[in-house]
Amino acid sequence: MARKKVLLSRIFPKLATQLLEKAGFEVKSWDKEHPMAYEELTKAAQDCDALFCTLTDKIDKAFLNSCSHLDIITQFAVGYDNIDIEEATKLEIPIGYAPNAMNEATADIAFGLMIATARKMFFMNQKIKNGEWGYFDPVGHLGLELKGKTVGILGLGRIGMAMAKRCKGAYDMEIIYHNRSSNPTAEKELGAKLVDFDTLISTSDVISVHCALTPETHGIFNKTVFDKMKSTALLINTARGAIHNEEDLINALKSKNIWGAGLDVTNPEPMKPNNPLLSMENVCVLPHIGSATINAREEMARMGATNIIDFYKEGKVPYIVNP
Ligand code: DGY
Image 1 (cartoon, helix red, strand yellow):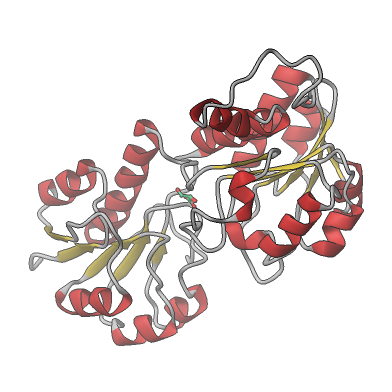
Image 2: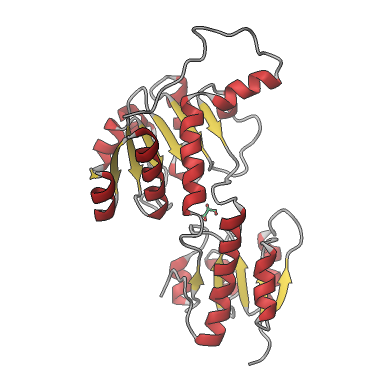
């Protein structure tokens, strides 16, 4: 087999390059911290056979058609809403991804954001940095307790399940969920109950979002939904920023229609430093670090490299979106 050339669109963990080179591939890697511009990526992919990309790369219809020579594209993420899967499938380009690698890491961030938001941790920390730590205040900045509350999981897949286990184990929370199909393991092990979307939003004390971004979930958390949520409810989103409508969220928080929000994802990313959400007392925002653990990122690198290696050596992509 002639030596195949793989383009890495970002600086990925070294393991990706090591595995690919060990298997005889030539690796061409982008070497800057920021993502490649769309045109740069299109140009760089011209003399490559395979692409290892991630959610900051727009792999749309035009890109795919100008790079239809690519044998395989693999995504350094579990989500792949940046890729036009339909078009890739039409062009017979297999799309790999990295499922399961970040279940625990992302659930830790969702769980952490839930507690941090309930107790206004980011805002209170900022007060110290601002030199505003006054005296112990018997009545100021009071938060919420989570024990025995109801958590509603939107998308009870692998990450949602890891979050539900944390909620059950730590706070004996009631678990309700809304999903395309029922999750018998969650029902048996955690007593989780499948409910319709309206029940989920109107009865949960905490809503934790773990679904994929699709046309159906795009902007699903909007004014209508915030109006139906409890005024004491928290929204935790570690999935994709476009699942909540930011303007409606800001208004819902300002008008106290909901109590707080913990976000690891925003729309757009990066969030601008003057975004009003960043100065709100009951809001905690993180810069999309759900999968940012050493273990998860190495596993994501391994899965992507394995997808490419196995595709050329064995004719199959082990972690594939469009089989
Ligand atoms: C994913 O995998 O989709 C996360 O958002 C980034 O790791």
